[in-house]
Length: 552
Image 1 (cartoon, rainbow, N blue to C red):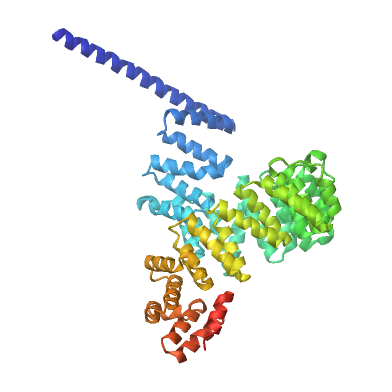
Image 2: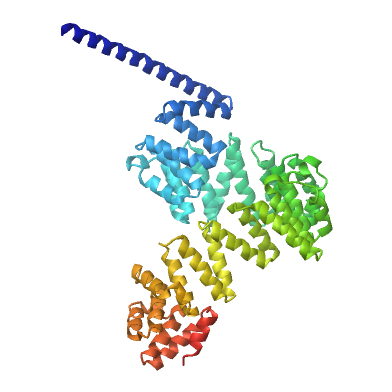
């Protein structure tokens, strides 16, 4: 027995020793990977830094330092992923004020101000008395259109950390937009000092604000001086060149030609810069100016898909149908070939060749497939060209295949309602109700149109009751249910349903007509007339106009 015990003990000790060795090896490898990641970051080798961190996080998902570094890299390399990483860091370190503040900043960059507010709300009271917290709170206050609160936050942040540039710069920028002349003068003085700061990023931000301030107040020579200083900075952006063009066009239009030529040279061989500048030329000079420049580009840039698309847009705006067909006839745009076919359809219709246009549009639709983004792009093109039939067809396709694209159903509803197409509206609402049986708005809308059309096969009385029972205080649901009761000759019950609503709801043009016909049916003719008159101000369907017109 004793031998067995010692044998078991020895076995356990071997296991423990092996585990300790393995754990030590694992920790050493994690440390090595972290060291490699930091080395790559120091060398500006983001790709290999991310690969090292990814391997580290696969081995140790709870390593908060690695997740934090990944979030830092994402903010510069892939902002769309930064929010997810910041959220992961907070999950791993829920009591870290710095990480919650960083999450709030990432949320604001992603436009999720609710998450930003929630993240800051969970920062401890003690940690709120810091420059980082107050500065982030100030930025959030600006997003919430609370400039006075933002100004107080930035001022507090600057007082808490006088050595920190960011809150002081934010404070000056905010005061520059003040209506207080003294505050504006002080802000300009502060920004002029920041324009000489040792850090280029700070100088650039200050110069942009001074440039914009001078431009807004019509001081174009000053704006141009600030712009020249900004463009001399290594951290200036190509968009700063476009701002300078705007200043020149307003302040010294005679110099626009040389400045535009310089900006075209600055665009170099970068397709994104070319797009930015060409779009500026289209909006501020003419499509012809932009097109004449783009056709001078090297072939590899001229046929670059985004540049080629913009050239096609220019030809469309100019009505150059032959040029458009000649340019696109021999090209292939890979995944965007559906756009090329759409432009070809436009060129054919522009040359009064409807059959050819229809054939090309059919190719465009086939190439787009059922992808929501592709269909949305085609819809935008059809809408821009005023092709109503194609617009509606695309909206129906989106509603059938992508019910989550709510904008499509809403746009189609508005179009059909404005055209008084009640039958088509009923079909749309039937489709929506079938896609989501819990959608009470769809059920109510289906019930209303079916009641107006007398379409008993849609079981509108049952649908109206279901929607009303789900939310009796909803005025739209109540008016539909009241109409159903009225059509069943249960006038007293219909009146009781509507009288549960606030007076303001009954006086709204969309509800007033139904209240009027029910008042008349229950013997209150004098009162009914006033509500039927209110209904005349509503956008009514033909069946509604007929129903209300039959009343006094």
